[in-house]
Amino acid sequence: MTYVLSDIHGHRQYFSEILTQIDLKAEDTLYILGDVIDRGIYGIAILKWIMAQKNVKMLKGNHEVMMLAALRGKPYDPQVYYGGREWEVWMRNSGDVTLDAFSRCEVREQEQILQFLQSLPLEYDVEVGGKPYKLVHAAPKDLYVNYRDFYSDEDHFAVWARIDITVPHNLPYTYIFGHTPTAHYTNDFPMWILHKRDRIGIDCGAAMGDRGRVACLRLDDMQEFYSS
Ligand SMILES: [Mn+2]
Image (cartoon, rainbow, N blue to C red; front, top):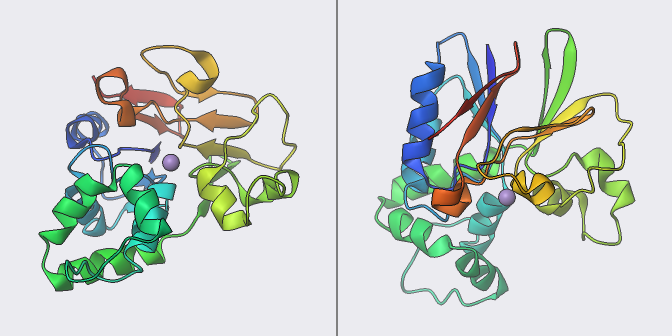
């Protein structure tokens, strides 16, 4: 079975509830579409768990990109002054809770975490039941051509974009995205997975704490799972 979820944002309790429901087997694959860290305090703990799993695959989200940029890909050193633009951006986006946990890891472990984050792709192509999907954090790079005026490059676009989902994309796949809570499009609370003809939104706003939750979609039969 193939499962997809996104935007855990440090909320370990919500993530654990999903893992209990889906009961992941060795032959299953779980894709996590980025933004594991920041907001809630358990982002680093969840990352370490993901790194230890063979059948859990992760994408880079804009929060992982911000962390790598702020730390310049190196272990945290309290002796270094980090007050550049990248640092400010991460702190403004709740990086402080992640930094706190990260700074308490051994240097060797910090290096492993950073190497893992650096190694993550921006997209996965998967086929389930003969149907092609592209898994992305915010948007497929294939759409960048329409958004050149708003994003500096396609990697930045892939993790930060807010897409107008009313415009059909005409790409030869259904793409599944996180990053933008589905309430942004529907105003529904609690949030539900958003199914459109040519794309599926699965960020149900765990970043918002009590107002959100983690959602997970099983692509084999489109069964949905939600944290409480
Ligand atoms: Mn995001």
